[in-house]
Structure formats: C-alpha cells, structure tokens
Amino acid sequence: MRIASLVPSATETLFALGLGDQVVAVTHECDWPPGASSLPHLTTTVIPEGLGPAEIDRIVRETVGAGRPLYELDVPRLEELAPDLVVTQAVCEVCAVSYDDVVAVAATLPGKPRVLSLDPLQLDDVLNDLVRVAEAAGDPEPGRRARADAHARLASVAATTGGVERPRVAAIEWLDPPFVAGHWVPEMISIAGGLDALGRAGEKSRTADWAELEAAEVDVVLAMPCGYDARRSAEEAEAFSDRLGRLRAERVVAVDASAYFSRPGPRLLTGVELLAAILHPTRFPSPSPDMVVELGVVSAGGGT
Image 1 (cartoon, rainbow, N blue to C red):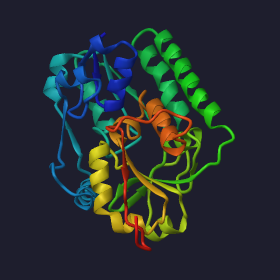
Image 2 (image 1 turned 90 degrees about the vertical axis):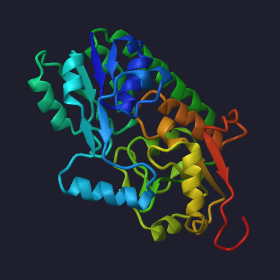
Image 3 (image 1 turned 180 degrees about the horizontal axis):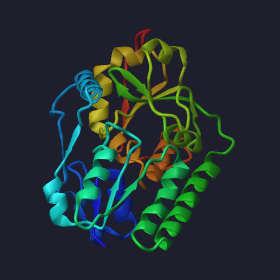
C-alpha cells in the first residue's frame, strides 16, 4: 500500500506501527522519526518564518476569517505519487490542509484513494486511532498491540502518582494572546499527578485573559506554545516573564510541545511521563534537558 500523510502526528503513528516503508509523502512539518523528513513534501504554509506570537495569531485569524487556506497542497505531486490511502485531520483548522479540500482533491485522482481523518479530542481517541490507522493499512493487529502497550504505560504512571498531593497546573498553549491547552492535555496532567486548573478534557483549547490566569492560583505553569520545542518555548516564556510572574506560581517550566503535547500521536505517552517527572521529581527519573527547561521567572512581588 502507498500512503500519504498530511499530518505530522499521522506520520509518527504510521512509523510507530511499522508502516514507514509504505509512506510515500509527508508534510513540510513532519520531522519525526528522523527519516520522515527526507520523504517528498506535499504541503507548504503561508505563514512566514520569524514572526512573533501576536503576529502569527493575527495572520492566522485574518487568513481563516477570510476563508483562505493556511496550508497549500501540492496536488500534481500527490497525483504523481498515486497513494492508496491519504491520512489527514479535520479537528484543527490551523494545523493542516483543509479536510474538505483533501476529500475534493482525492475524488479527482485516478486511483480514488481512501481519505482517513484522525480527529481525536481525548487520549482514548488518540489510542483508538492506532487501531484505525493499522486497519486502514490492512492489518489492525499492530494497532491493537500498540494500544494495549500504551494503556499499560499510562497505567504505570497513574499507579505511581496515586495518592500524591496534586499541584495546580496552568498549561498555556500560546502566550499572545494566552491560550489554555485543552483536548488531551488536561488528561495528561491528571494521569501525571496534577490538577489542571483551567483546561477541560475533550474541549478545544481556548483563549483566556491574564486576569483569569492570575485568579487560578496555580503552583506550576507549563509553557507549551503549540509547535515549539523546549528551547523556543523557553524563549517565548522569558519574553513574557513579567506576565507569568504575576501568576505567582512556584515554578514555570517550558516543555517541548511539538514533540510531546501538540501532536496527537504516540509521543503523547512520553509527554505524560515527562509531566510526571516535572510534577513529582522524587518519583520519576529526571527528563532530558532537550525536553524541558526550568525557568527563573521574576514574580510580581520581586525575587525569583
């Protein structure tokens, strides 16, 4: 089978299921596993590089509001590669090529490839998609094994954090304007032994004002700007140190959101384990420095 992936999380899922040799093309954002980035790219973005968070937010809102796409699909290349299966998503209009556009294009291709949309809102949806992808590729059994292994990993973390005192957590998915992380992130925090003070499992990420964040009285702030690695997340958090300091949290921690939180794929499991190590460092091994950056953010009352 020839498979085209139009979502980074789908690419990660395909490779994790042992289907990497069947993937013929990916997006320009597919950077995991390392070999995926060398495959032909089917997409480009209209957002220029090097912009700040407010400017990115403005362009996204204006583009989507005008009904224009944020991503462009290379239709001639897709036709040339002749996939049997195209894996995409419809849950986030700013994360990938429009689902409706993909369906319309697929209908015009000679082979009429199947279009599979992965649209998880919660962790169980992500794990069930392992089976759906494997089934669409012709053999659901690898997906069932991967789902069982994933449940076992999550159960192990939950068992270790059972009975612990749960710190109040604010997971901030964007900083200008502030976005509270939703979807699967509140579940990840709960399994890791925390209490998400602002997000709700299964609900979309939402904007919030700084007054709401201050009123939440959180112990830990997780800076996880969507699509950024730990270093870039830390840079963004440092730029907003005054605002973050007013939250009076005991800790502000920047994480690799792109790898472990933004993308609903297999690496969310590592994200849960990372969160557990952040929230309960005496119970879990220390995470790698490229996964998390502990920040010394100046508080509103002075000091660090």
